[in-house]
Amino acid sequence: MKPIVLAINICDDIIRDEITKKISLIGLFNRIQSPSFPTTHSSLHVYVILTNGHKKYKGELRFVSESDDSVIFKTNADVPLQDPLKTLELNFSIRNLKFDKHGNYNVQFCCDGELVGSRRFIVSASTSNSERK
Image 1 (cartoon, rainbow, N blue to C red):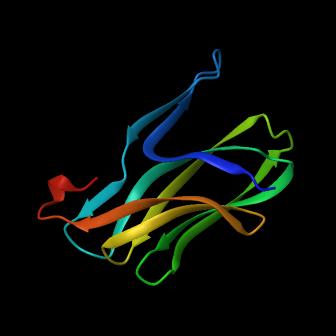
Image 2 (cartoon, rainbow, N blue to C red; image 1 turned 180 degrees about the vertical axis):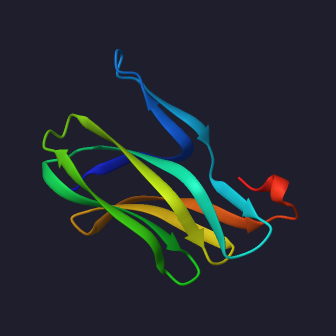
């Protein structure tokens, strides 16, 4: 059995309260706009929550272009999820993410090389710098 992805969220920042252990996702978004390409997004976070684990997995987060299935970014993480009734929250901080062209992308999460969840992320052309996220 493989883990189940309960959520993949993209946001500006993630804050964890050390007393309550609650997590706040700040500035959720699913689109970046830019007046020109290539473009670089300076900072974003990806929050992934998993359940149904049965062992320690090798996790991989990646951004994939839908137009040609090319991976434009990937990073790895240990996924210690040995109790299927528990959840595991992961926070990926990504700096200077470069997009060569506008279009649809998928944020994918894999465990042991197998895709377990994804969500669409859009990069679009805008007419002014003030619209850029």
